[in-house]
Image (cartoon, rainbow, N blue to C red):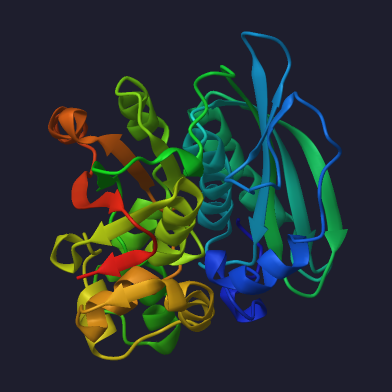
Length: 343
């Protein structure tokens, strides 16, 4: 961007990435009275809500529709656009679908150089193309705080949707990305992030769940969700409560980004940590140490897939993911009961 005075995007944001999400507890209250019009073709809507809505077109096709946007979490505009796009596209992968079409949702101060917005869009376009979809337009408004994301339409077979509500007792729980993006980004803002920690977090946030979903698809998982703003424990609570099972997680098995656990031990937290505890804390029985618990409550941006898979398929799925060069951590299991246990 020759000739354009650089602007630190994060200096214009109160909170960045999925840490800016509205409180999950308040969201539940807000949506409690909203019931979509009854139609047998709305396969996934608000009752209960999932990672995306799904509407059946015919016996072979259903559309997956989602929207996701947030304020900047890094200063480089192209990287911001790419991460925001990855986060939105991953909702389609979390439903078992494939993205087809995306529209930009953007808000920017008029004072920002237009070239910066161009870089945001270019970063998003790269990820949309990588996902196999097309960035076909969008809508931009003026705002004092920059925000960017996508509305995404994808396709899935009506009988091959991955809901949060399908987990069964004695499933194995796998996670396909490391945790700690919120902690690392907060440490960067506080000026205490260790060398290399931010680069590792950005690399993780730029990774589409496309390849992981392609592997998982062949193993017919019971339930899938992506781990984003509500943290691992928030999303595990949603999966467990909607499936009627108890999720038992092993804190020692939680994969952490470089520096994330040490930063958690040093007391680094985001505002999203508090909101996630308010949402899921009463449903979580924890005997883990404080740092591991913070890692599990930490809001993630463009996090991995949390996969509940029958035990007899778990070892081969884990090996297949690892063999494909994808992160795969066996972090726990489901059992009869309710709630979430972090041991």
